[in-house]
Image (tube, rainbow, N blue to C red):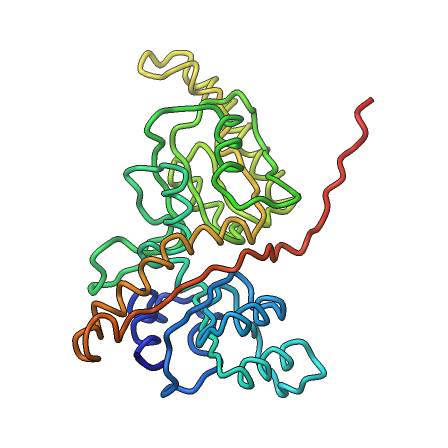
Length: 312
């Protein structure tokens, strides 16, 4: 069996901490570096329910996408839910490792998993990172092309079909009949990257936590630019009148939890394979380094119901 420090070294090779945003502090949060690890439980959020599931399964390590601590704390007393979680993990001899914005930018990370689920080809990072050690392009978000053009409405249905089910579904801002070929995605909160999306030439942006004013302003500007293109193109024989009047980008707003859970399709494969590749022989053979993985089935989206207007 491998120990926690060895597993962490693998995790931080797959999802390097140097990829994390400056404000973020992913990595090992709880755990004895010398404790043995044979079972890893995975979830988007380290809620108390998820921790209970991990301990009931006998997990040695819990890997989550979202941090338990976003800011510095001065107590882990059990009177608060974070302290209760830390004490449960320690008492159950289970570590906690977080792959947050570092996993967002990594190869086969959160955004790449979402882009792959939607079938995007010719992908590049929306915000590239420079890393000479990386064998593949890395960075926040992904932008790529659909193998076949579709409409905004059909793409919205595709997004719903590839995401874990939630009560809210998705929201769409844009003309449902508009043609869509180039798609930008970012798992999790993405309304800070509108400029990068516009520069990428994406027809639609799939992300989470979109707010009223940024989206309204972006759509108003897109419509104005489409009007200007349409007017300027009247004497331009090389322009496409059908394309010039389309307001881009449109937006598909997804539940935050759902857009990030797709990452674990890759993580459940990549983590044990990387542990075996790194430590299989040195620890006495493949069987000695084998890791059992499990993904929580718990829906940690905080919204438990959705009510629409009555349409008599």
